[in-house]
Image (cartoon, rainbow, N blue to C red):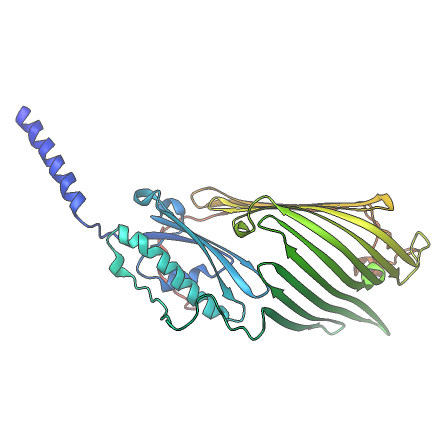
Length: 409
């Protein structure tokens, strides 16, 4: 009995010793959670690992968060070791120019993710499975100096025209927009212009009904950084909206905001509170229910933005409170919230709720709105609140691997 026990013990010790000296050749399992980018493309082009669809089945969980600025697409990539690689975590940020095509950005993202996985392949003895190409360096180039003929200015123009028609009904929509931005570490200068025109024509017997809604917005802002947590700026804009009885609206005012976390953490966590005060003047297409053709108002706005993007899901919340300083009873409170949570393997749930308490409709036109105006939303009507609720779930099960792409039919 003793000899049998001793033999078992020696076999166990030898097995442990042999295991410690043997390189593990098992393929690495990876889950890529790409929020706002093409995760399928990344999986197709990184073939040295096995891709799985749940973090509990992965050796490495890769979370990619994306955001936009005027000149760049910003990415934060978090690599989290799981199972035998628990505790081996890496995180870094990088950005790509918006001038690049979507395919160029996808290829660059593949290269960066491949480079990030190389350390995990090294831990498993599989570093030969992946190649990383490093850019050639010109030793004569001065580090940190970039020749930019645009001096950080970025311009964008866009346009769109939609037409839908039937025998007795025709609907068209035209949209045009332009943006200009200049970004530095200390300043952000921005200008926006948009024009939207919707037209609906309906023929009935000998009559012809036409509905036209036009919206114009022109705005600009200058924002100055006051460190890693504070910013201040000046905002101005012009707008009109026929559906809201707004002939013209001018607004100008300063703002200040404070970020609980460093601004550099914005891709994964954000808690920002801000305050804006301003003057606006708006004239109306029709005399309002308060017998006004023009209003001059000083208003204030307090807002809170909260957003967390983590492996278990995403939380996003925005609270916005407006009031007129010359009439404190004129207020509007808006709460826009949504939560997406991974409850267990393969099961996700999403909740969304938006609620507004409205007490500032000074733009309502005098007189009764026709049924056509109400149905076609050509005319604003009185309301005390707006509510939107939503819930959704998803559950995925079956094969844990998803390395194969088949697009036939």
